[in-house]
Image 1 (cartoon, rainbow, N blue to C red):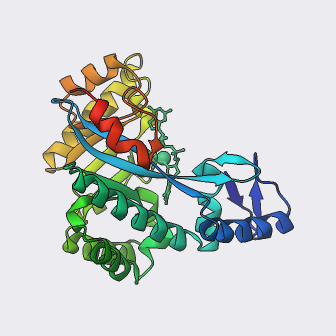
Image 2: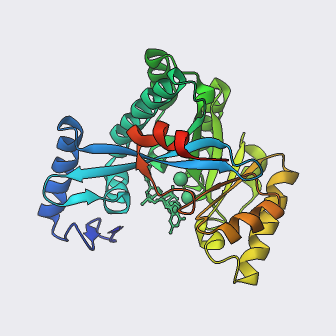
Image 3: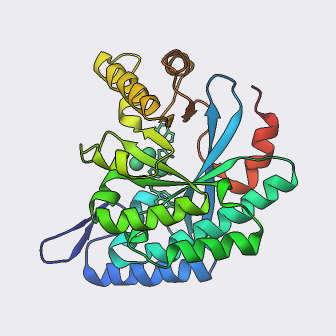
Length: 277
Ligand code: C2E
Ligand code: CA
Ligand code: CA
Ligand code: CA
């Protein structure tokens, strides 16, 4: 993870180190990563809990670094957001996801691809136009996409975020509130924004079988979402027992290691073929 200090310096732990010379080289490396084709699209299936049907997949980026190996997004997404590089990255993910959607449709598989948007993306006035252009080029409909945004990304600049999100939604893409329950506690935006889905953060789901408090939060969130006419998805579903519990609570979809870890996008078609409802 990266932290911005008061003096503006970016501090890293773990894989990427602390000096500003290094973070400058990280930006260069990230820029090169796109050109050198080092980014990889991974996806994690989303399953309808009542039927077991695969209803979507979340796009999650990985960086196949020539020396450092497979780098996880926590190691470079925060940095990409701070430097504005996230806009390039998001476009890459949208492009790859459109290609995946097209390939799956050709195999007769229709599902929604969820793509994560960050604060910077919501401030980007050109994003809706770029999105339309990518969809047109790959002959994919906007309804094949669900765009995930976090509460904090919205609260950074609610007016501009709302404007961008309304444009994307008007085009036909679904909107999802990611990591629901971990961000700002204001529920007002839920009323104002054209949201279709709530995604319950995995921190509440992972241990909900043992932790009564977590189970209560999950149950309340499912009811809140349904009362507002939204689809509710639980992430971090790691066991059959949690699946059963969520299903009993009426949760619509689940995503987690119990069904599948994130896999290379190229393997999704075969994975779906093997998955039995
Ligand atoms: P997220 O959007 O909340 O994504 C869900 C994360 O939970 C993923 O981590 C996924 O691998 C992990 N996960 C899924 N199921 C389980 C489970 O059953 N148990 C546990 N313990 N974890 C599970 P990942 O792929 O490392 O991504 C981390 C974060 O990086 C994402 O959190 C998202 O905020 C960000 N990210 C990833 N790809 C992108 C991207 O393309 N664009 C943007 N803006 N952010 C991205
Ligand atoms: Ca997400
Ligand atoms: Ca999440
Ligand atoms: Ca998260």
